Every structure is written in structure tokens, then in C-alpha cells.
Amino acid sequence: MLGGCVAGAWQPEPLQPPPPVAAPVKADPQITTTLIELLENKDRYRVDLARAEGTPLGEVLRLGSPVGYNIRNRFLNIGVPIAEGLSRDSDVVFRDKLVSLARWDSNGETRAAALIAVAQSREPGDFDIFREALVHLDPAVRFGALEALQVWSGAGAGESNRRRALPLLLAASEKDYEPILRVYAAAGAARLGEPKGLDRLRSFLDHASWLVRAMSGRYLGDLGEGQDYDVLVSRIGRELTNDFVVAEYCIAALKLFPKRKK
Image (tube, rainbow, N blue to C red; front, side, top):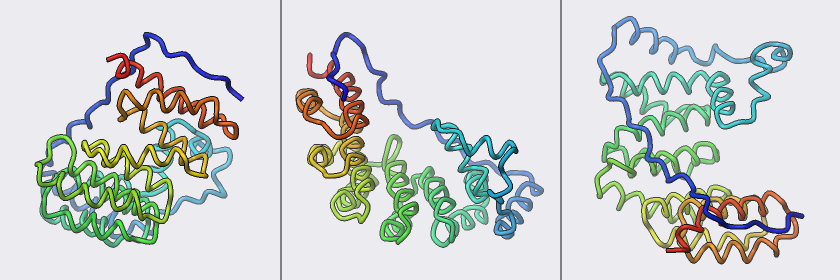
């Protein structure tokens, strides 16, 4: 078991704002026609994982970095790149197709990608799309809805978006069936400046699941206050069951150390 960590002068990178969203453009009709055709026939394009061994796709499946995961997800579910394509065209038909993906598609990963793409326009009228996705049976869809809500109400959005998103994030942090989604929702509320989100993250440090404890420690490192430094450091020596949790507590404490000094 790891014994502890030492906080020093290391300065964590500041939280980065979301990348600017490219303004939709009016595309060449050939592109429009092709994307719609791909969308209408997307169930034809299924990847046979049993035949992936020894191919470039087989290598992609072994990638473990965040970028590797995104590559794997993108090229296993054709709905993911289609959703991105639809979000980049200002044509009202594309917008309707994207909303349909976000609300009705049978593939959870595709629907999650479409929800996030819809959120990028930060249109107040899209609120109900995210709200209805938060009660979907598929955790991938609910996860997409939580991420979409944060995009929809984050930097560049109006205050009304934030006020409407916060109750949903707080409710999910208390009631979602999946513990890791409750943690993510609490972090989303904290990211929007809601103190109750931080309180929820702190409460998750006592959860029976090591993954929940590790995730809450990570998000407290990103979003917490100076007082959270002492809380996390005090728990490092008490965490006897999982080194992943200890590692996250150490990283979080290092991030919070400058706040504690202030």
C-alpha cells in the first residue's frame, strides 16, 4: 500500500474551458446528401470484432489512453461521426436529423454523442431533450445527457440555462441508479458553481465502492476548496483497500495545495 504523498510547489494546470464550438456552415449539397444517406443506412455498417484480430482495428481496441478510447468509440459506432457531421451544417434538415438521433436512436453511444452535439448550440429550447434522456434505462444515454447539460449550461451559455440545468444535475447526483453517474452529476453541479455539488462529492468519499471514492477524490481535486486538501490528505493513510483511491487522493491533494496556502 502506498504510504502517502508530499505537497510542494508543483502548480496544477488550471481547468481549461471547453473548446470553442465551430459555427455551423451551409455545406455542399453532395455532403448533405451523403450524410443523410449514411444516417438512414447506418445499421448496415457494423464492425465484426471477431475478425478484428491482426488488423489495424484490433490494435485500436487495445488503446487505453483517453485519445485511444475516443478513436475506438468513433470507429465502432458510425453514429458518432455522423452526429458530429450533422452538428456542423446549419441546414434545418440536419438539425432535425441530429435531434432525432439524440432522442430516439437505439445505440446508446450514438445517442450520447448526438445529445452532446445538440448541446453545443446552447439553445434554451433543447432543455426537454436532455431532461427526457436523464431517465433512460441505458446508462450510456444518461451519461451523455449529464455531459450535454454541462455543455449546454457552461461557458458561453446564458444564466437561464445554468438555473435550469442545476436542479437536474443535483437530482441525478442523489437519485441515479448508477453510483458513478451520481458522482459525475455532482461534479457537474460543482463545475457550475453550486456548493451542494461539492458537498455531494465529499459525501461520496465514504462510499463503499472504491471507484466512487476514487472518482469523488479526482473531482474534488479539480473543483474543491482549500479545506478539501486536509480532508483528502487525512484519508490517504486510512485507505487500506485500493491503491487507485490512494493515487487519486494524492493527485487531488497536489492540485488543491495552492488553494490551501491561500
